[in-house]
Length: 131
Image 1 (cartoon, helix red, strand yellow):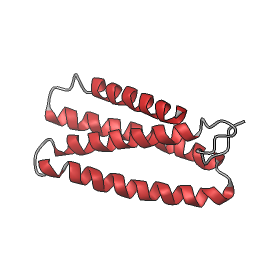
Image 2 (tube, one colour; image 1 turned 180 degrees about the vertical axis):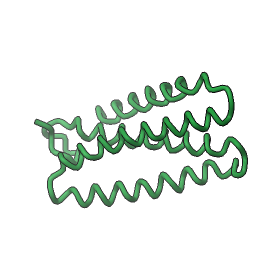
Image 3 (tube, helix red, strand yellow; image 1 turned 30 degrees about the horizontal axis):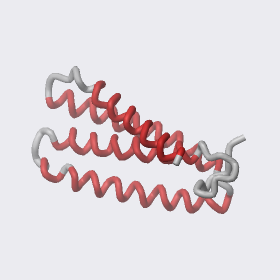
């Protein structure tokens, strides 16, 4: 339960922060550029958290985590391609796709970060507690 609340809080904060960052964009091209930067920032943070999770995982779990992450990437990409398909060919399509990618990436990062907060004896958490 604690991990879920942490993930929801982090996601709500990150989504609001992402929206504020692009509020001053004046053109569609600026919005597209801004949302691309947001996605890149979210992806960088996810990669850092993912690397920390890999380090925390016991050897037998590392391949499972890699497999899960690769499957999640495939799902995220397919979901965002679908979500932005209604605007294909339009100037807003990159913004819609980037925002989807940023949101889903921030959500995944919050989930992985919650796994790094596991307490001793939490059987719902696959990673061992940190030192």
